[in-house]
Image (tube, helix red, strand yellow):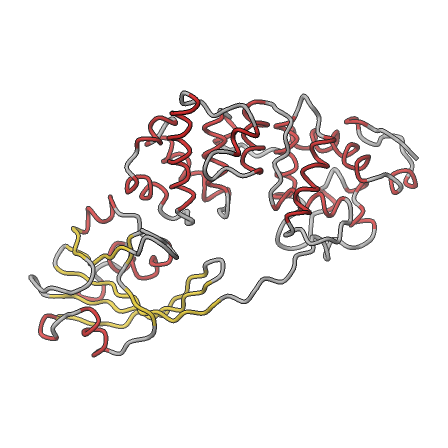
Length: 379
């Protein structure tokens, strides 16, 4: 059988014909229903209002590892501060990381700045309308390059992320591990061969959107709402709960740590992490491996006992990185005016909030210095 339904879908095809479609025919037949659904159901998102190459780029980098609703405010704030590539290229790193605070994976922000500098130097401040040239810029992989050229320039290149892999693997009842690079490459090649040449941006966004809203990552898919239900082999074969297939991840390394929230007058104690490794080069609340007792705490901080006005244990907390999990015990310490330590540096509290990016790993204890718990322990 060699049927070609094009972008107009599968109207008039029998169930037997639909089930016998090849992978390419199935993907081609999905395009029409998918585009119609997207144009009726697409969410109103700020980066879709004016999809310039810069806006698409910033939003796609922010959306990696972060929920759409959480990104909206970061995106607005970022563009207010850095409205174009020239502003991004010249922004001081500390200011950039402060704007990125809370999004995590701070090397993404550093790569944005590097790529902006290269774009200014090599392309006159305009992101190139070339998939291959975009791949040469720091921090831009096949997904981001595909998103930029298809959405901003209308160039038919795929943008395959986790949502797209889930939709396609279910549509085709593909039982291969979607975490394999070979599976992603094969999916990119398949999409490239069938995507509508005149609607590349909408097509890519439709696949992402249906993966986010209908063929969802957590819980069962909403098949009764899906325009591709009739085409979906996983639905037909009762395999939606088995697909996508993912190889088990390696167990995370558990690290026990002690974290300190230290105040002295209107100052707070901060540290700066090493230039390599986890949270490289970022500011932190001082801390150390292992759990310390009170005597060890003062010794590690280099603080004299008579300089301590209050030392109070805080609730335990944990923070999960991709391969490491921190299990933390925290302490709030109030020092008398003029007291010193042998670790970190004291910063004015207001300046610290405005200038220094503090990763999410420390937020459970930073709130006792900057947030809703401020001052409660020593009133």
